[in-house]
Length: 416
Length: 135
Image 1: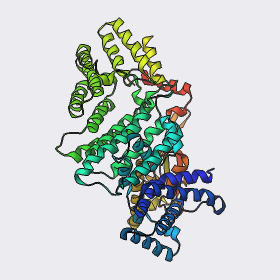
Image 2: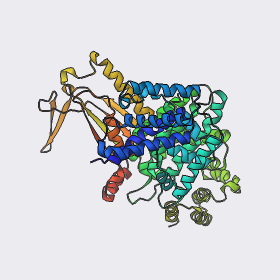
Image 3: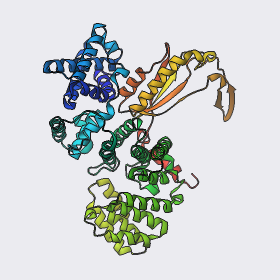
């Protein structure tokens, strides 16, 4: 049996992102819009137990939030022409009666969601604030849910959100879709936020659990939302492809005892075929969108993930192609971590000595000084070359470096 | 969490849709499907041919028998399905409520089992088959 609060939460999760977006148009302040939508949800929690759950909970919430928004701008006075028009529309609806049923129907509500995404990921905000605001406003997660997903105190998240809203209001951020060159320059920040959220779920950086699948699902929902509205932006589809393909392996990454399983040991029957197909479809969309342009960094990573996804078993993996894709990625978005992954692929494609050569070239990278995968990869290559003692020393170093306990258990198991 | 939403339409085999008169309904349903997609929750969907064209394979005493449709005794049959990924059962139900379904239609919302829903014994048994060569 569903309780009223279940229904309010569910309708809120469905409605609130686009409601916040629509209300932002009226009140011209994302923070205020979010609070008004919260108010409408609270009103539902108070009224529905007595009045019964409305036939169309979403429409009820839309009407309630819009009502609050119109009250808010009226109280503030000095409406701009566009705001005045929105208020007039609302009043006309009300005169016709039955505001709830007409509410803001989907067409009237419009689709300002993408604008809201760009606002939440605005360059005036620090990165953790972008993540928190995006999960709050677009993902419709509660502050407590965001805090527990990132293992930070709830007060920290609450503060980030409050400060973020203030920063947006203070910087007078325009609520509109960036166009032309500005769009190109701001898309990466949006994709980065989604990628960060997914990664925190996919390889939890701290704590007991190896993965937090719910957070991966939130990131997938975000990227699907953005992709459905960005046909011509190749990297959006590149990221969508990457996340669908990574997520297709989620179920296979833990064994029955909850211990992590490395990619080559995973039971490929447990890879989700539907998500693989969605990932490959997104890759097609990326390639169509960019035409003759070279693939971007997310698309390249998605292509690498696709190489794994389509290999029938680990032995059939096309490591030569993966090594080439990593070389392209290293040229496009050079980083020590990419270089390390390239070393792994080269080691598989052309032998451990070739891989070790690449790893040793980045051994002293300051960025990798505390990165547990560097000694872990070196250990693997060294042991394949029969250099057992050196390999053991590297495994010990890797175990010391990882903050994730499940990953540490895996490394300790390899130590025997 | 993944859910299957099974549409059980209130139509007979003869009127199995979409018939030409149903253009408006189909348009509404298409908008609904787009809404699911734009909300980032839709994984896939399909509509099914009528049960008149179906076959039923029954198992009994180690033997199989095949019956061709239509099936006289079947009243509620699945006409199509959506697979969605949402945060809760209530959210799945709320999405089902938004469907522009016809009078008398029923949507059954069923959560899809994930491997972690099974006991460790079952998970190990599945893993064992997965490890066998040729699997």
